[in-house]
Amino acid sequence: MKIWQFSSLFSRVHNWQRSDVPSMSEHLRNCPFYQAEHRTDPVLLTGMSESREQTQKTLVSTFKHRV
Image (tube, rainbow, N blue to C red; front, side, top):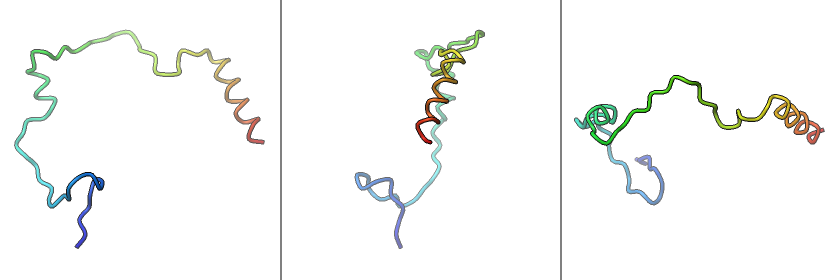
């Protein structure tokens, strides 16, 4: 029977089981070093700083190269 592996650098996984370790969110609730950052203003995602016109020109030029 072949057992699934992460990669050849890891040892074989013989079984999966849940442990009684608290979740990361539970840890962060009590961690004195964790500082939540509450924002109310929208945050731009990567690539959203370009204007619409620049983005459209980029899309058009991309499709022109395909033809």
